Amino acid sequence: MQINISTKHTELTPTIEEYALKKANRLTRYFDRTESIELILDKTKNSHEIEIIVTIEHSDPIIARAESTDLYACIDLCIDRATRQLTDHKSKLRDSKHNPPMGGSKP
Image (cartoon, rainbow, N blue to C red):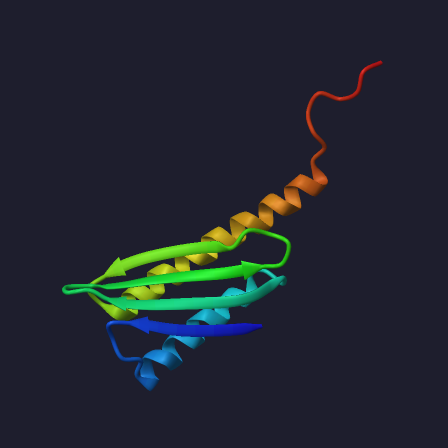
């Protein structure tokens, strides 16, 4: 699995990169078919914006965004949102396989 970090209007320091990679690796625990994770760090005038794109095998990508004045809090918030989306996606897939459609068959 591949993790890419890119920045806009800011510099990627080794500490930020290490922190973001550590947090992004957590996302692999929630879904086995994760192909790649892309983090986009953007600095605006007064805040930081982060976007995480998780590419999943045989599915649409999961996109989570967060904005905060603190970069580390923004990373945490965005990872939490992506985690929530991944667990919801996984439970949706699991439930669709085990629960037959309502209505039954005609006699």
